[in-house]
Image (cartoon, rainbow, N blue to C red):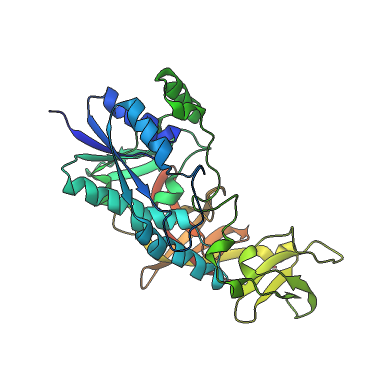
Length: 358
């Protein structure tokens, strides 16, 4: 009997093609799909296209001819991801729930299931490349399709995880993935890509928050002048310009969020520039941080380019980055992810910035 591979099957094109490729390579393939949306007060997700939809995943498994198991992890998703998501917004942050879900829930549960049921490998449809290091350990590198690379969300993986993981579509461009899906007559080739958060309904997540989270409050300049009224702090993020409903003699942007005073702070664009940040909840793929004082490449949000920064190790799973050139709109709650060229090193959650450099 060949090696057994467990595919995390969402029903989308990437995970479906990942499963198909493993079958072509002679693996005995089975699939699991996590269901996350039976949490308290969840809206009706029936018929909605989520990143993990039971109906599309079941159809993909039938087309692939593989066993398929559905696992309800709604309570864990609510406790580990959604509660944190709401709490961070209420602290004036802009959280990244996908990174947290991958780190604290999705991979850990899939790997545990694989161990319990005798699988040799856990397979996902992430666009990342697993690469060997000279010392026999594993690393991750950006996917072959730069526009679809997902290393940013996987900084929390560890060596023991990587020993049991495979990412077969990471070597392919997205168009090549679709070509394979069409050639294999997989229905996933016809599905649109999911762009919103998996738990959003029509892009909206306000149903997760208590009503008082959206109490109106003042929009203030940095010197305390009131310019208007906001519609609830969770609706705003650092760097936002549109939708403020204020008039000024020059463009103004959200430069800070003050939950203690329920105030939105605005300022000119140059006030968004920062030269450093600190991050906490740090994790490193090798198990060890980069050398203290070394130069790394860092991304402060998924779609931002990686830019050079000096790394400084701090106590309590924290680090500091000082950027060679100031960056715009460094946002607490987002992820600071570290690279050496195409190689992922690790990352953490942005804690605070040093303020404006202007």
